[in-house]
Image 1 (cartoon, rainbow, N blue to C red):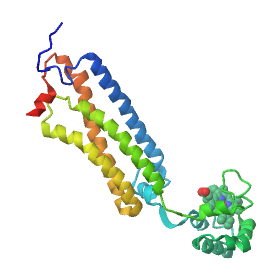
Image 2: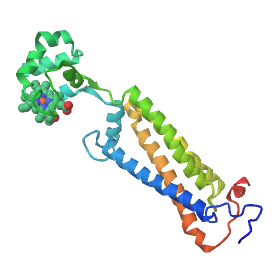
Image 3: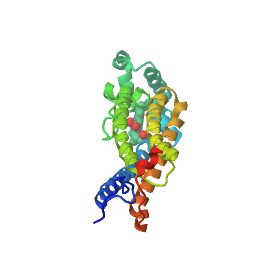
Image 4: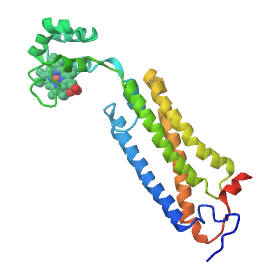
Amino acid sequence: MKSIPPNLAWLNLPNLPASVKVLFSGYLIAVGLGLCVAGLQIMLTHGMADGKLGLSLDDIVYSYYGDRSGSTLEGKLNGSMKEMGTPEARLDIIKWARNGAPAAEWETHIRDTFKQHCVMCHGTTPGLPDFSKLEEVKKAAKVNEGASIQTLTRVSHIHLFGISFIFFFVGFIFSFAVGVPKWLKISVIAIPFGFLILDVLSWWLTKWNPHFAWLTIIGGFGYSVASTIMWFVSMYQMLILSRNGKIYGNAWEADLK
Ligand code: HEC
């Protein structure tokens, strides 16, 4: 049996005992997979927000700021539903929707306009909103204002709590790396936390002003890069660098200098 030197010379990624390496690398592999799946999920949800595959600035603007140029109802009446009503009926509906879709006018004549031109499909076809009901029409008549404050609050706190946990452990493991200059180690450990806060902040800013959407991209990109560096350096040192049999010395002690 090897005796343990008093300065904890084994306290570094290459020289850790196998049990701790299994713990650290098992965690890193699971978290790495989780981050890939998270990336995929972002592509499939936010990435498709503007109707095209792939994440773009438009997707982020659409998700957080919305499309305030008009309601779905108005958009469709100027788009794929253009041929469905007479020009007068379309104009009536659009004016009514812009006025906030008041119930009084719905009762007097708008209900009939929908009945005449729309309900033969929207009321019979499953999957299409039922336009014989005012509340369904109201939903389509609302201007898309992107994520609600409730959604943003919920996602923000989940994100901050959950992801800082990941960064804490990934950074903790990486703090045992050897041969990384102290300033670089400190930066790579700190950067994800900074960008995480920037990322969450950027959602709120984008909700307020669409020009901030690029901050979301920078935030996400920044913490992905920093955690990828920590991931690969840690795995490399534990599993490959360790094979040369060298004793590297206490990694934390080296950072005290
Ligand atoms: C011939 C059947 C038909 C008629 C009539 C029709 N629609 Fe549609 N509508 C559809 C179909 C199919 C879709 C889904 C495809 C699409 O979005 O273009 C749709 C989609 C919509 C949507 C988007 C729904 C959503 O949640 O994405 C709106 C809004 C809409 N129609 C409004 C109207 C209005 C207003 C009228 C009456 C002036 C009307 N439609 C008449 C078949 C119809």
